[in-house]
Length: 203
Image (cartoon, rainbow, N blue to C red; front, side):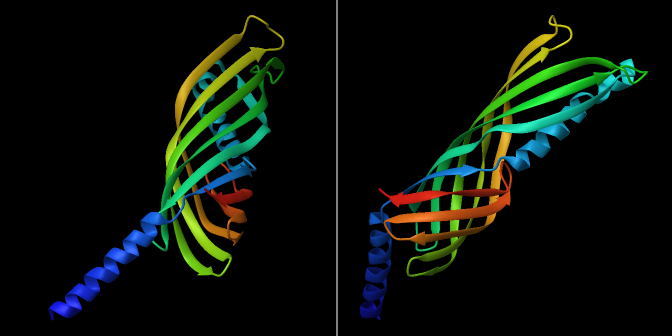
């Protein structure tokens, strides 16, 4: 019995020692930023709801990605399937908010600029790994430090700047990578982007 126990203990310790010696991976990637574009438009609608009720004015939004989501990601293996780490990223938007009076004439047009720095810890789980091919998913939750600037184009006195902290997340149930020391990858999900892609290499 003691012999079997010693064999089991040796196997467990060897397993975790091998995983502890596994090198971490660094990823450099880009995301489309489209998912957050939808959120930005929704946020603007909500923020203008009360002014619309009070003044009778209405607002329309036109938002486009100025800088796609650029990110740097690090992962450290805890086991054959599980990795932990974090991601930092940046993206920016340009937009136009048009304010209409009660008679639906243009009251003012605002240029909106918004940039966000993101910090998200996360986990990575491998579904299938065969040779150089890996099928996986990941989950990241964190914060975004947002900086916004609004300028009225018809009334230049209407200017404003705002800095706030946002909840940030990215859930990618589908991820594919191919390679060994150097890899290419693509991920699909919801959060900041619908699609992320890039390169990954072992440190």
